Structures are given as C-alpha cells and as structure tokens.
Amino acid sequence: MKIDWKSKLSSRKFWALVAGFVGSLLVAFNVSEGSISQVTAIITAFGSVAVYILAESSVDKANKGKDGSNNEKNE
Image 1 (tube, rainbow, N blue to C red):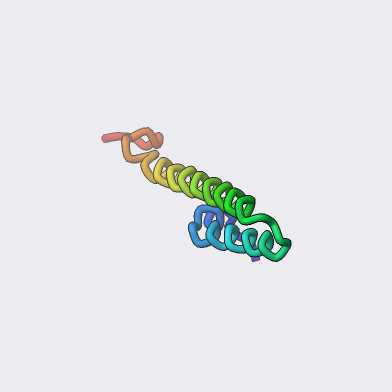
Image 2: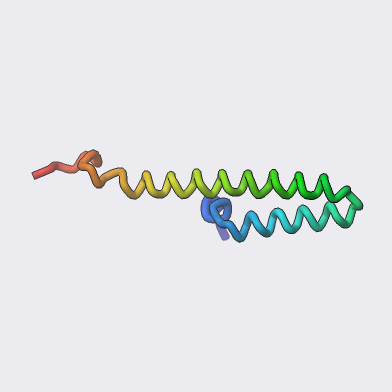
C-alpha cells in the first residue's frame, strides 16, 4: 500500500492531527504552557504553508495547458 504524501501534506485535518498529537505529548511530559503554544503555532504555520504550496502547484498544473502552451497544435 503506497501512501500519497502529497495528499496527506495538503490536508488541514492531517496538520490538526499533528499539532494535537505533539501538543498532547508535550503536556504529558510537563512542558510549560508557553512552550506548548509556541510549538503548536510553529506546526500550524508550517502546515498552512505546505497546504498553500501544494494547492497552488495543483492549480498551476491544471492551468498549464489552457493557454495553448502544452505543445498541442492550435488550429
């Protein structure tokens, strides 16, 4: 079974899971609340950037041939 990492990394649910899981681990290890907030903020910021980049690349890929630049003969 092959994992579709592009799909996983572009999922907001995945990043919410990562932030929640890491936050829970930090609470379990008695890390200060300020540090937990900072780590969670970094994870969600990275997730937002990853989702944006992957979404834009999908849009660019879909639009690539629409202006006639896909090497097809225009009649």
